[in-house]
Picture (cartoon, helix red, strand yellow):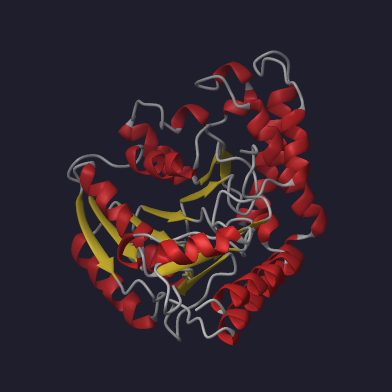
Length: 369
């Protein structure tokens, strides 16, 4: 079997095809990151690049580990058993925040909405009611619900966070950061979570967190000790010996190369490319009579599309038939498992020519039934 058997038309919703500049960065042989200033300089430059995509002046830190490390780290570092938490869920990961916080012994109220929907004014009223009653320490939400193919507008939640005096607002932007506009500061987000393997098209080995001063202060109070601990990364770039474990120089170098390429393209153009390919995908599926999973009034994500498995196919049959033509797509999770398939058009996969080829494959496969 070849080393990369699924390279013809990869449309898996992450990890995505690695950016060529990131691959080139990974080819280099780096020295010990704690000697000299080269690593710290690169780390600092990479964090500065990421601040631009996150729309923030918050300190950005880069622990080693894929995006779930960021989620666990943000919760473990800011919560104690018994703390009240409100989670807003329009999908698997939004409600999953609640399960994670409950597992840490917190008192959780989930504002759970249909998994094919996005936040509405009525939903914000429910959130407001929960905030007034529970007075949570932390409010959580997900920007892009990858399993559902949706993108939540977060301005309203950020406004409620401020109005109700919620200490911390934590947002999972793993599948949107770098592929859609993110306004951490304008949305009053205290901890923004990202990952290297989605829109930045790097291996799944780096977590990305933008952390406010208020969040750092809370982390000092909680004083969590563990691999996911974020506090040791606070201002660690000032001295390479302060990093809590051996830094991942190749991972940071790849992320730096990818963000440099995206900044050269220009964030506005990057986001427009993602929107255009997403629209191409949705229109193409409609032409093939493949319905979207998302409700008509929901906001579709520019980085991933969720559609129903076509009539006449089971999910395993559909997946195998597409793969036989070189097209690799993803399934979904939770109540969508077995009913929904996903096309990840993020990062390097936000490519109009690739999408046209993918739609042509689906058209060909549909002719077999």
